[in-house]
Length: 286
Ligand code: ATP
Image (cartoon, rainbow, N blue to C red; front, side, top):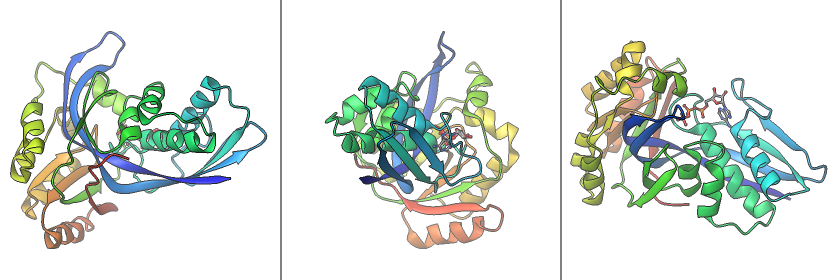
């Protein structure tokens, strides 16, 4: 039996880090939402009990380092499952991009295996298990739009923002999330107003959403990689209503309500970026 699952990317509309914790992570306060750029996974039951990873991508590991593999291993152990699974992963989400591609693959694996292995777990239970795999996995299990705190694993559901176009552009560099958080200096970094974003989403006020976009990690990634700032400036000059770096970067996204403006942004960005995507906000839960 084979089950097909989609793993959508996420963007952060706002991302703040409030304190460095003793376990090395930061406490975060952020609003995350899903977009319709997705990886595709095929989960096929294997009688042998083995977990086999088949990712069709040069920079994505095919062993226990893959987050989808990790998710399957955690679930298998927890419920003492005898069967195995082959995970065929078709990557669409750029890797090491700040779009939670690996976390979403892990989350999709948990959702898919819940069906394949007939575990009958709720999304909330799967999200709790996902926290053992990575901080962004619980959000990716739930999907939709949420306020996240703690390491990112404590979630409060939020309504979807009003529909709009999202233009994603990833410069050719990759960025390590751990390195970016490691270099974050909370005493000097410009902090975003998370409550203003939450209020803007609740009011369904697109202009206020664009004005409240903010990411504390830009204070680290922008000085390290000047091309990120250049893409932001270019997007603004093309008329994007809102522009921000997602997660630890280096992907930058532009929000616009106008399809022709999204197309103009896409055409302009293709000039100096290989990876450019025009997508929509998904916003709603799985
Ligand atoms: P986040 O936004 O959660 O920080 P990211 O989008 O920056 O994540 P990923 O694409 O998830 O980063 O991958 C970061 C690293 O994790 C990659 O360099 C890769 O080696 C490893 N990795 C493990 N599993 C996967 C996966 N399923 N897809 C992509 N990368 C994976």
